[in-house]
Amino acid sequence: MAKRRQHLQHLASAADLVTTYESVRAGFVALALEKNRRATPFLAQARALKVAAAKAKKPSELLKIEDIQAALLTAAGVSDKALKHLLPEDKTEAIVGLIENFLEPAGASFVEELVYRFLLTRGDTLGGSMRNVGGVLAQRKLTRALLAALTLGGSRCKWLHSATNSWVEVPSENADIELALRGLHWKSGKRHRTLIYNSTIPFVKNNVDLCLFDGAPANLSVVAYNDPKSYVALGELKGGIDPAGADEHWKTAHTALLRIRESFSGHGFSPHTFFIGAAIEKKMAAEVWGQLESGVLENAANLTDEKQLASIVRWLCRL
Image (cartoon, rainbow, N blue to C red; front, side, top):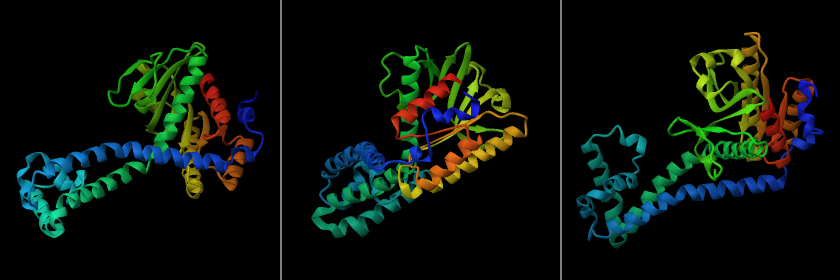
């Protein structure tokens, strides 16, 4: 099949790209479950705070309980980021303000008031971490699909741990590996392929969601990142499921892909480009399809469609 017709393996028309109502609903449920998972540590902290604070007979005595001072600052509305810029006397002032203005007026219920205010600040922290959760879940789903395709094909893989920044063999028992994976390496025939998530390409001067390199991890040096011919494929992955934000996600991805093509063209190269999105509306689908048919974009898939995801992953693994 010609290079620019790969999408026909899993798409027959623009309509196939449109996200179904069932997929949108399932996506929102997944977000809710992830939010609850991330909230679990905060709830455990709140329970521990309630037990520790109960030792105080009145609000002012909270200042004497050393192991809850950080929690008191949180309840006072001091974020983890702001905490780094406060002097000891500033921290004490914030806690005293919490006690005098909110805990003492609460009377006998001051411990409950403290816990509520602790959770209020932690809720803001959770909200911040949830802003890009769609992208995180999308990356995990794509990773799991890639591992499935490579395992079925009998490929041995290595993965890059996001915390340790080290490459290790993918074990046969690899449940939850996607939670910490930032890169994946495999062999396509005799060729080494390395996929890295969220890389900044020097000559593009922007972050790219997915970069597939020609070479093994050991060869991925600063030189490789600066060499246009090291790149096999580049793609944008948009995991937001809210239909209201679909057009904005596509505009961002379209701009990024255009910048990629122009940057590589300026160096005399034309790597594969692709798009994978979770929320795809009719108008957006028509635009993506138009780019596929004209050859501007080589491949695309709806992340919520298992068949489309499996097809585009097989394509990536064979490049």
